[in-house]
Image 1 (cartoon, rainbow, N blue to C red):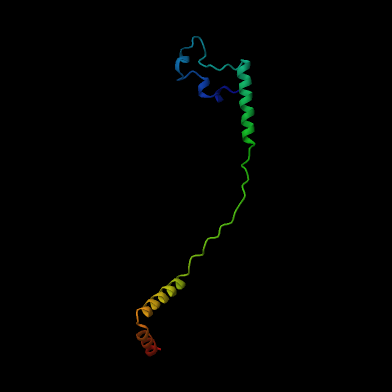
Image 2 (image 1 turned 90 degrees about the horizontal axis):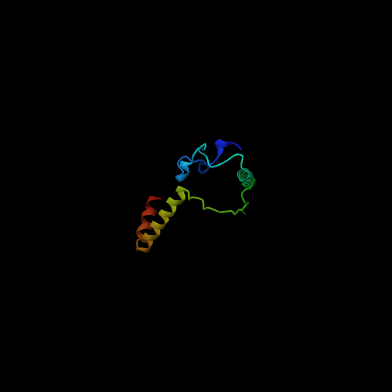
Length: 103
């Protein structure tokens, strides 16, 4: 076991009443104690189990996004709708006369 790798709660620095342990080296974790060795081995074993876990493979799906309209197509649709609105307003004859004279 590597002492510097121990968690903060295994040392007495800044840890409540255990600061006042007498004659100790300032830690509450004994490298020689069998329980602590078992605990250390258990934590290492659990960490290895977590390392080997791979993400669960999810099914994929396909999304179709509409293509943006071409600028020319948009302009022609706007012009057509404007001509249609003129036609609906009774200006059809006037529009036809103006297009016949310019053609």
